[in-house]
Image (cartoon, rainbow, N blue to C red; front, side, top):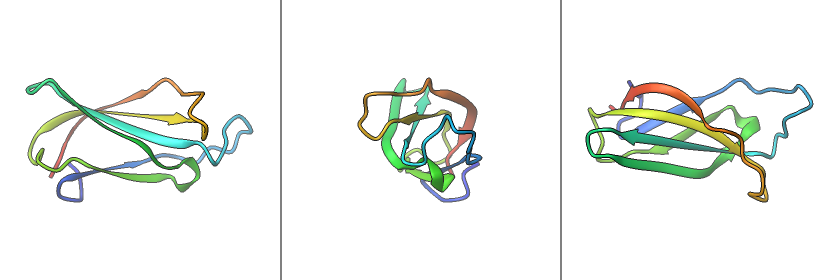
Length: 90
């Protein structure tokens, strides 16, 4: 369950293994299987922040399937998205 009404909060471990760049941009997406609707936010925050909040107003008390991924600053390179599981918006 999201701690903020109408929003999902995404957090991740900040990786400094030399293969990632702090200026990369995080994106998030969510899918509602009942409405068959995708909602996404591109370029939410820089990777080195470790947290992003995405607006999902109108989906309170709904189950969503959440995904997260990373884009290069110029948008030319994107990671594969990672499935985070089923979540509920408060």
